[in-house]
Amino acid sequence: MNALYQNHTITIYNSLSGAKETFQSITPGKIGMYVCGPTVYSNVHMGNLRTFMSFDMIYRYLTHLGYHVRYVRNITDAGHLTDDGNIDNDRFVKQSRLEKLEPMEIVQKYTVDFHRVLDIFNFLPPSIEPTATGHILEQIELTQKLIDKGLAYVSNGSVYFDVLEYNNRGLNYGALSNRNVEELLANTRELDGQNEKKNPQDFALWKNASPAHIMRWNSPWGEGFPGWHLECTAMSTKYLGENFDIHGGGLDLKFPHHECEVAQGKGCNDKNPVNYWMHANMLTMNGLRMSKSTGNFILPMELIEGKNDFFEKAFEPSVVRFCFLQAHYRSVLDISNDALMASEKGYQRMMEGLAIASQLQGSPQSTLNIQNWKKQCYDAMNDDFNTPILIAQLFEGIRYANLVNDKKASLTAADCVELSNTLQTFLFEVLGLENTKLTAVNSEKLSGVVEMLIEMRNSARANKNWALSDEIRDRLQDLGIQLKDGKEGTSYLL
Image (cartoon, rainbow, N blue to C red; front, side):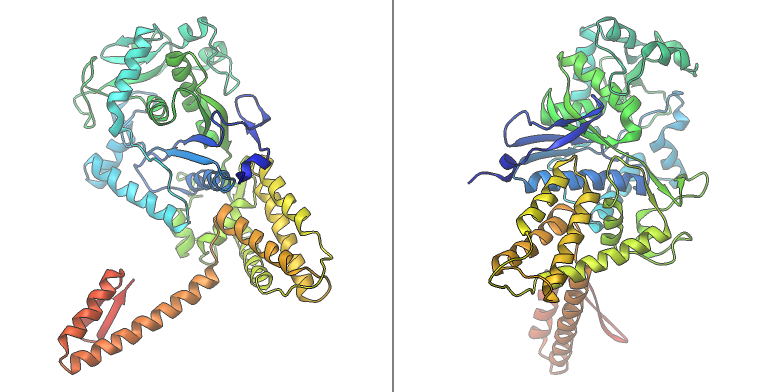
């Protein structure tokens, strides 16, 4: 049986060419995809969530089509400096001082938070989630290779990529972000520590650690730590090869981070590291850029728990997800109270329509063309993962269900099943939504069962049947339900 992808042609907007291109994987049926993950020195923010959600959707759709996708999303857990080279501006060091924790405690705390948030929003885990600190050896080897090829140089224990030498070889630093090196050099301001570099635009592959720097490793050039750009090149190359299919991330990473990745990959391996560069656009709130400094800022958990001053109520994770996916991943997305309230109504209408679609009764003939509607759903996703158009088509499918339910149109039994299955496939499998109404019903049923077992246990304890009492407690514990006996009775935690 042929995989679905063999019957579908996908176009992807490639940031490198600035145009939509027909997607063709390097190895038929297999895709290597790398997405820049979080720097875990603080809570994952809404902008991060939007980017990761976009690529979770892309991962889901490619997998649905039958591709074997190796999805690599890294964790940046190694300290790296800002451009001024000041140790006081190292994000991990600053946060560790603020919270009075060791840097790796900061890493652990916010890595756990990152995973918790993504689980709540129903993200699929990546195939591989490497950490920067787990790949120091690969980064040192890559740096040495660039030195040996004359594209990097050592200065005061640090190693820098030589941008001008790279361009003198006709390799075109600035191709991804469409920038001119001469203009970059002219607009680069002098910063502290720039006297280590041959020219201001050179970027660090390895930084010499000052005595105050806590996160440090041995290298041929002395104790130090890797450059931020180097980490992703080392990890993507190790797990996906010197040339792979898709590299994604937020638009803010296009320059300099991804530009530097292109230079490192081409410089090391004499080939383009990535065939398709994809970038998710920014997130705004109430028409303004999100910023901690201005206070126009909200964390994912604050939004879904209702603990904020921007929104009138809490919103289910699937409602937030539905809101996000109503904008194309390359478009700026603005969230506001009105937008989320509208998304909540639309999401509820979708779930209600799905319930109707799943209970339709077939007729001898169809007056609606379900196959054509289904094709339009796939056409939307095949056109650079156009989720807004897909959602419009799914609402059209809900309209079909209502027409049939109201006896204003008819579908055969087979078409009824096709309509219901297609809606469920795109809503749950591809878009990653969850039916919160069903979840609530199941939760209520579970609570009723647990309460009944607690009553049975209390009865067993009253009759001094300790074996049965302990068995109920232990069996519930095995299922992840913890009983707590107190003065006011027995409570439980799920």
